[in-house]
Amino acid sequence: MYQYNYHRNKQSNYKSSKIYKRIFLWVFLFLFVFFAIYSIDLLIHNKKIYPNVIALHQDIGNQSTTDVKSNLTEITKIMLSNPVAITHNNFEKNIIPQSDIGAYINIEKLIEEAYSIGRSGSFLQRIKERLYLIRQKQIIPDQRYLSFDQKLLADFFTQLQAEIEQPKKDAFLETNRIVPAEIGIKIKKDDLYNGIKRSIIDSLDINSPVQVYLPVDYINPEITTEVLLAEIGINKVISVFDTTLQGKEENTLFNIKKASDEINGLILKPGENFLFNQLVGPAEKEDGYKESTIISNGQFTSGYGGGICQVSTTVYNAALLANLQIIERYNHSIYGDATNYVPLGRDSAVFYGYKDLRFKNSLDQTIALFCEIRKDSLLATIYGEKSLNKEIKIITMDKKVHDFDIIEIKRETMGSQESNVLQEGIPGYSIKSYRVVNDSNGENMEFLANDTYISVPRRILVD
Image (cartoon, rainbow, N blue to C red; front, top):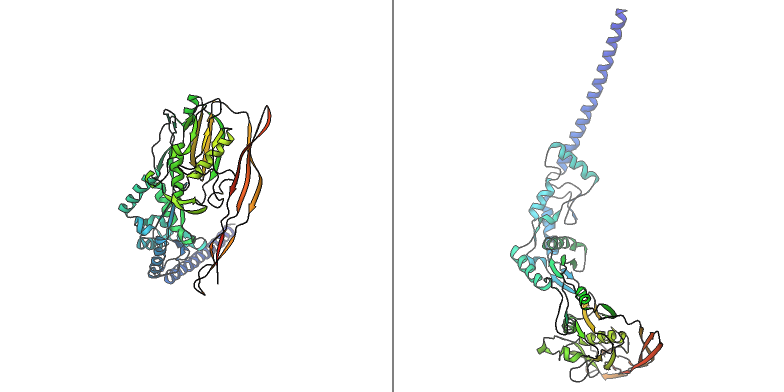
């Protein structure tokens, strides 16, 4: 029995020893192969950045640090010279990062980090990073290597504050006007800087200027316009009308804003008249208005105050929808691109000393007229003490189109590359407009105007 147990134990020890030797051999082979691969990997990528490393939207893996520096230097030149458009509602400011805010990228530090991936930290950390790079790309957060010249950046931000920021203002009541409340605007500096950094990096993938939507905080006033209207009992919306501002010239937008500010918040008691020219004035250079497109003598031309007719037109339509009595109103001489923000027959031309917009508060209640820019629209709103309880709409009838003439002008130089079209033609029109009022007494249709718009001839060069 003793010999049997001894023999079995000896045989068991022999098997265990054999297993341990095999395990040791496999471990040894694994480590040998592992270190061999690791050594070969180090040798292959000696003085090179490991594969799958991304910086500035570029795959810089398998490249020497010298080559990477050369390539990224050229790329950063493009990035820092690409325009960045900072926008806020109708405001837009274009900057060149390098020249305007002193943007620069620390390429040396960026390459240093890229090269350190898979080569820094503990041995296990380096192995972990190398295994990760086999399966995934590693993107370097390159924004942290993008900096600005602090003085240029501060000057830029100060200028931006002057153009955008405003303190909050409570609404208050003057003799015959409500001065509307203003929401305070404050630029979020850190968010703006981070947005500019992102846009600079992203500009490599976009052909047009990268847009940065200006991040701001809005600060509400304690006494809003609506609160003040409720306090004085003029808080029922009687009519609303808006016209688009899309595609308008910068100077035109300036003039529209200036003219609408002269009207905004006006209070009219029953029987009082609205006189556009008296409120806005001549709208000349001396009045602070800018040069823009106007209609003069049946032609689109350049002149001061261009855009104020859109204000009078918007207010005119709000007055129509409020069932106010129109005393004086004129249509433009032509109807084209500068006036098609409103349907044909519903425009209101003004020219100081000659053409005015006048209407009467023919209601039995005090009204307040607001005219202001809201994003891409000019909005006119009339408030009253009570609702009209009427359905009002403006219709046009009997529209006629008059073709424009074609005037041929002899070309002075044969074979000239000058365009054949000197002036595009604009059709003429005639149209009648009416105001239709529906209330408890039935429907009533009021004739408003019979408007005529002259045509503009098409002028072409002929040989």
